[in-house]
Length: 103
Image (cartoon, rainbow, N blue to C red; front, side):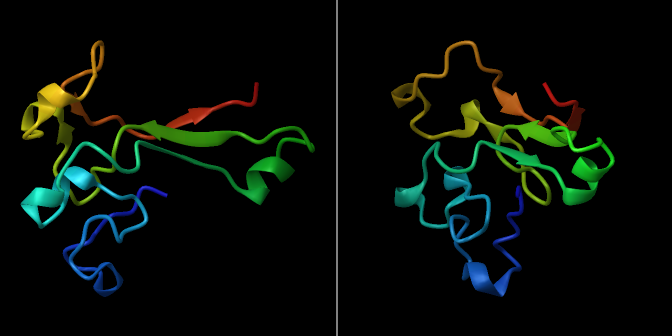
């Protein structure tokens, strides 16, 4: 769910927003860049549900834009940062996958 390898994935056609997890800050065309795109990912599986006796399954989640194979998203690197409201957010996002139990 957080896949973005646009530089090497032929289907992306060298466009960071043609990948599964769009990263607008990485757009090759500078005039198209901005703080938009996929901001988190959550995954689970049928086997996770099966091992939880029919109750809601455990799931994995990560906050922030994808950084697998890409640079971290940092507000300080966004050219027009002042046009976005991001008070209280960290400058850079590099959070690992975490396992969450069902609520």
